[in-house]
Length: 461
Image (cartoon, rainbow, N blue to C red; front, side, top):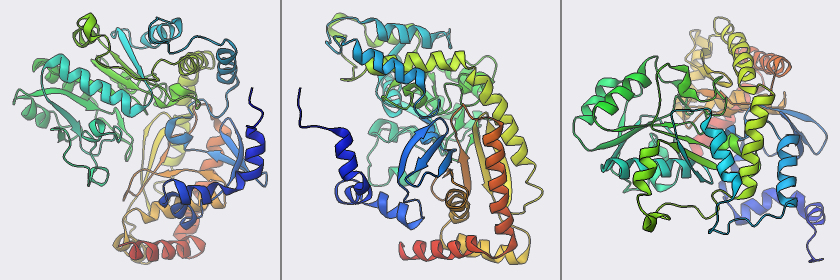
């Protein structure tokens, strides 16, 4: 055993260099951005829905690692499962055996969607989407996949081809020959299907960007149109799945919807080991893996590794044992209703929407002259600055981490761990009310910060 490597000593010696190391060796814009908006904190430890800085201050996590931390941080059941699988010293990733853990996790996952039959394990949400795109094309013999405007399905080349935002696509063309349709527009979908070259439609039951739900009845209507034209429905549940919206999968809010392929990831990891999964119907998998010489026609080097499988099994056990899907529905309804009650109180607050613990708070143009002039100044510099003005004091003054829901959007998205309850909802609503009170007062630090953001936006043009 090597005596030269000591992780605790390394972190003690160089842990304070994080921002400088990122600036020198990783994405140089990340530390720059964090320092600009005052998010350049150093967090020392975390547990559940909270983390703490080096001064011992607690922070409420309403971001959940972009949805990865469904169980919160360092859940004891997941920790024990990982310790156990490491201590077992399994013969992992031999490539020429059939270990039990992937089969057990696949078996358990499929119980939540009994119309599906098989699972392919990968390492992330974008890989789960890539798998679904490949399988849909091969199974149907068609090249084109439809996606919805403003969708987000990942950033690798295939998933980027079904990304509905130009800011992510710019400079990476040419991509695959896929086509955008409006979410909730069956007529637009049918026009594309009549061309006869569509393999599938991929859709998020609730779009992560902006938190827009598929309109009632749309998924069922889309499924019927797709099957009529021999095409498939792919449900991207990478963020909405595993209880986030108050049902195990987001598509389950609508009766009769049974996607042909379902993509999951994020929360399945327990926040520890990256894992993605693509669930599908038996005939699709059998068509892709049609003979022994096609056994490795689609594979992933680290897919089905023992640590990821153990984490996934532990996550599903916790979701059931602690009834976290029901908790997401209950706490989400409480938080959403309390925030929605503020819409009539604040003219800058336009709408509160979402399902379960996936909530969007949208701001809009105020009616009073004094606020309207400030709003217009921000919009002229860069759309989305007001939402950022709200996010920053939530962190700096109230120690609550949130996110703007997308580039140039006046929407804050809440995707906290599914374990939060009334205490956390109260803390967020109280802090949000305080920030909105200051924003509507017409002065104070929030508007001073707004002027700083305007200068930064102009400088970056």
